[in-house]
Image (cartoon, rainbow, N blue to C red; front, side, top):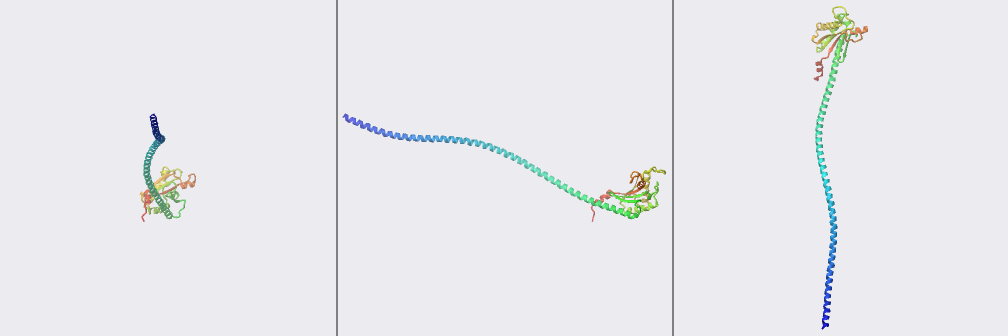
Length: 295
C-alpha cells in the first residue's frame, strides 16, 4: 500500500515536473521573445533618439538658415526699395534732362536761325556796301571826266572810307589872302556843279582850309575867318550861279587845324591851302541801299 502511494507520488511528481518544465520552457521562450522584442524596441528607440537628435539639429540648422534667409530677404527688399527710389529719381532726372535738352535744342535752333539771318544780313550789307562803293567810284569818274585834264596839284578827287573828297587848291580858287573866287575857278565849280546837280539826293559840305601863316590886314580876324569866308564864297556860287539846292549844302571853316602836309615847307603850306568838297554819306540813303532790290 505504501509502495503504491510512493509510486503514485513519484508519478505525480514526475508528471508535475514534466508539466512545470514544459511551462518553464514555454515561459522561457516567451521571455526570450519579449527580451528580443525589448531589445528591438530599445534599438529602435535608440535609433529614434538618434534620428530625433539629427532632426533636431536639422531643424535648428533650418531655423538658422530660415533666419538668415529672412535677413537676406529683408536686405534684398531694402535694396529693391532703394533701387526703386533711385530709379524714380533717375527717371525724374531723365525727364528734366529731356526738357532741358528740348529747351536747349530750341535755343540752339533759334541761335542758328539768328546766325543765318545775321549772315544773310552781313552778305546783303557787303553787297550793298560794294554797290555804294561802286556808286562812289562812278561819281568820282564822272567828276574827273567833267573836270578834264587839270593839273593834279590843283584838284584831287578821291574816295576814302566810303566818302568822296574833292580838294581844290587855293591857287586855283583864290588870290593870296582873298576870298573872292577867280573866274577860272568858277568854270571848274560849274563842272562840279553839273555832276552834283544830276544827283539831287547828294548832300555835301564845303570846307575851307589854310596854312599856319597868320592872317594879316583886311577886315578878317584870322585864318578861321578866312577859311569860313572862302567856304561860303564857294557855296554861294554853287547856289546862285549853278542852281544847286542850298538845303543840300553846308559851309565850314577848318582854319589851319586840319593840315594834309607839314607846314614847315613851302610845298606843305601850298597843299594845306585848299577848299574841300565832301560828299556826305546819308544814313537814309545808306539804309535805302540795304533794302532788297526789286527786279
